[in-house]
Image 1 (cartoon, rainbow, N blue to C red):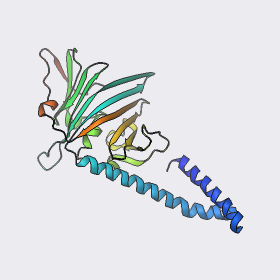
Image 2 (image 1 turned 30 degrees about the vertical axis):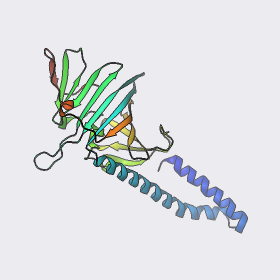
Image 3 (image 1 turned 90 degrees about the horizontal axis):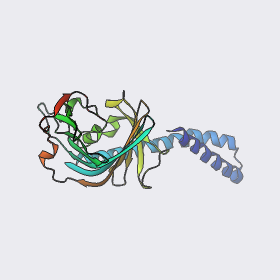
Image 4 (image 1 turned 180 degrees about the horizontal axis):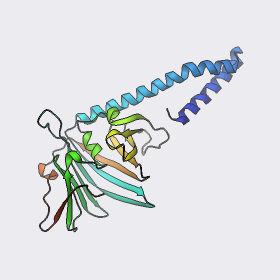
Amino acid sequence: MPYKDVRCLSISAWNLGVESYVMVKIPVAALMVALSLVALPLSVGAVAEDVHAIAQAVDEHYNHLRSLQAEFTEIYRGSGMERTEAGTLWLSKSGRALGGLKKPGKMRWEYRSPREKLFVSDGKDAWFYVPGDRQVRKTEARKLDDIRSPLAFLLGKSKLEKELQGLSLAPDVAPLEVRDVVLRGVPQALADRVSEILLEVTPEHRIARIVIDEVDGSETEYRFSDQKENVGIAEKRFQFSPPAGIETIEGELGP
């Protein structure tokens, strides 16, 4: 539990101790000790249960989706600068490969503002292309180490409590909407690059925001709106063929 929560519990115990002293003349110090032994473990357990319930509900919601379309805003903060971009996201659940293993999900991030660019994966290959450039970058989807990839795994592959170590509530982080809940954890697959991920969850158990804090001090925030679930998405949406005369560079994808 974050330190601030422990402090609040201590204040609550002190108030309750004073009231009890006035009514039945029980020493305040003794009552505080008793409360610290009883109330705090129960509160910790209740919080853990809440986190578990929220994580399970999010898993259940996304694991039953076949596809997802949403508008997104991406905000990057780092190196003394801030950059905001926006566009449309499409996600589609992939089937199973030989041996019963689930293949990576398909996704398409179509940036429109302030500059057009494209990040797309068909579950086998992933591409990053900026119209007008003379190069396109390509990598195998299974080797993808891009910070956009965790959302695709929520389409039927992820369990939050396994993917995010130390998953807990983040009461110190203000949600975009009052009724939303913010969770924090460290992604196992990106632990060498990402120090923490924040997930904002709506009452309908949708992910409305992802904030990714990287070890170099930079931060990337994704906000999702107008989410449409289980919509029909043409297969060609996840396919990409480099324009004529464009050089293909294989390796890590661009930002």
